[in-house]
Amino acid sequence: MKDLIDIRDLTEAEIDELVCTAEDIIANPDKYAEVCKRKKIATLFYEPSTRTRLSFEAAMLELGGSVIGFSAAADSSAAKGESVADTAKTVECFADIIAMRHPKEGAPYVASKNVDIPVINAGDGGHNHPTQTLTDLLTIHREKGTFENLVVGCCGDLKFGRTVHSLISAMSRYAGVKFVLISPEELKVPENVKTEILDKNNIPYVETTSLEDAMPELDILYMTRVQRERFFNEADYVRLKDTYILTPEKLENAKKTLSILHPLPRVNEISVEIDKDPRAVYFKQVKNGKYIRMALIMKLLGIKA
Image 1 (spheres, rainbow, N blue to C red):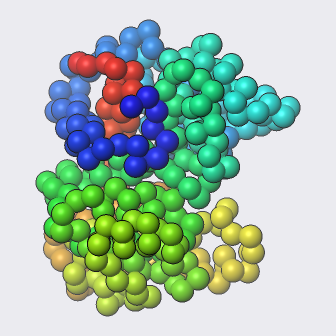
Image 2 (image 1 turned 180 degrees about the horizontal axis):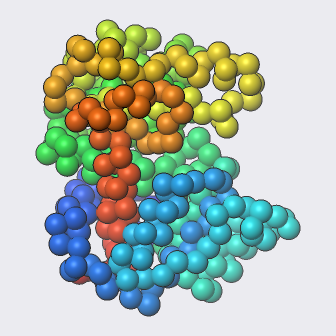
């Protein structure tokens, strides 16, 4: 594997290997402190990001490497009209690996086809966000000890939510997984995700508009925000943005062993009162993102501790 553009680029064995490496990094950080010495990651972020960009940068720094790049398209030659391919070819002269976020679907793929160094898709439009999915998987594994026989509830914007699409794709590989898809009618999981992933792999799922009805059977609740930036119509966004707000009352019928994940940023879809509930793991999830990205950088650079 040279690049990571889509979570489907990874085999089940490769996912398990990355999770295992990340677990070892958490347990033995000193062992990894210098493994990427003299290596550089370029973070090319054409779209705003806090967690993803900083976690890639922290990951490389904690591996003993260094960071170059930009945090907005306006800070790069893209502002002058330079193509993604030309930017990637230029950056290849200075870096050993690229992490790219771009509003256009397929942009990291284009970059990967034009350079010989590894390219990681750090999010391309509403399409894919594979390292967020790896973060989610590491979090699920750390909380549950397995990927199998889990009921996974995905709640909120399931139409534009690239993290949800990638998570469904990844978790569908594991035995005994069932999905509960909770959304307004207008933000349901796209038909292609249902036909190409769920139906094709005979994965059981139900669609509902009621979070309360779904809650008692869930092992994982994956909350998402309604994303203003994916809407063409402000009125539709305003109408749908507060459809699901997770409060302590809504957790009354939930399992004591439930794990609540969220790719963040949250707006108001999870009450801050939930933060102190031991079932809330979304800030642990942020930290896990750094560790899984450390494991991924090492794998793509062919480095072992």
